[in-house]
Length: 327
Image 1: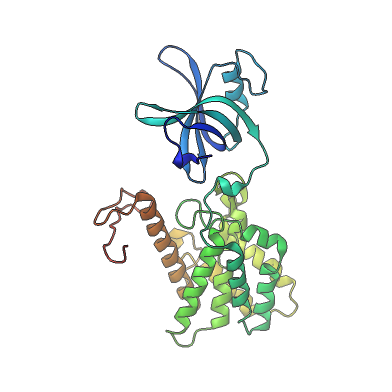
Image 2: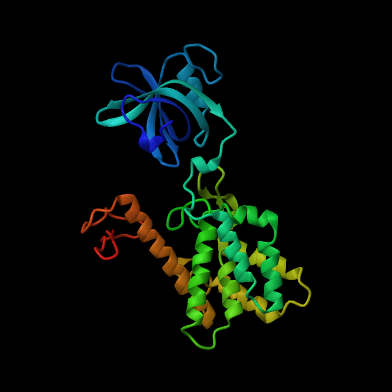
């Protein structure tokens, strides 16, 4: 069946969508209808259920619209049967049947990293294998060799809105920052390579709990109350306690890398970078996030040469599509 972005007028639909928004409205002739924003990984389309007697329990009756409005939750998954029509220049699904479903693959409804998750995990383990410091090596193994942690780390997004906003985004972002940090070791002298690589791999570990990503990408309660920096330091301290003889200075320097990686107090860092490694990590983490944000926004906007994008509210600017590198 066509996905949301592929639907066209006249298509018959029998597909599962996720409910993004819902509302009970009344048409100009006084008929009530339930309007929903229905989505999958490709996009969104409006769906309308009219007062046809379809109740939320599947039984017939005149209060079907009210039943659905009361019992349906934003984030629910619905199997929809209906037909795509055009109304005032916009497509919508005229719904004939719908039922809540539970067993879905969330990857069909949320954006997913274009990279292969298994290959990225291999890359992480490859970087860990280059760490010579036995304590840092053991610490990294305790995270990335833990099945429970990795099941979350492989799935988590890197952010809700700014960058790498998709399943697997945290893993992808972490790898990209690690690669950039390794490049910096070749350009600057007297860099503690093992510490910098460990910091790059661990700097965002708190994001596995900062976000919820089972239905929508959103902040978890823990994420809203603590934030990923505090969560990450807590996770680090817990693992370090389990490693006998872990050097106190190494622990302190790793904590500093995590605590300062947003660079400035106004951007969420409790303290600014005060080691060369922390400065490098902050700078390259910020660079990677911003480039991904720019490129993702321009991809969504299209690829017309020589044109400006629409205004990006978070970045507070229009973006220019450079002619270089296109094609």
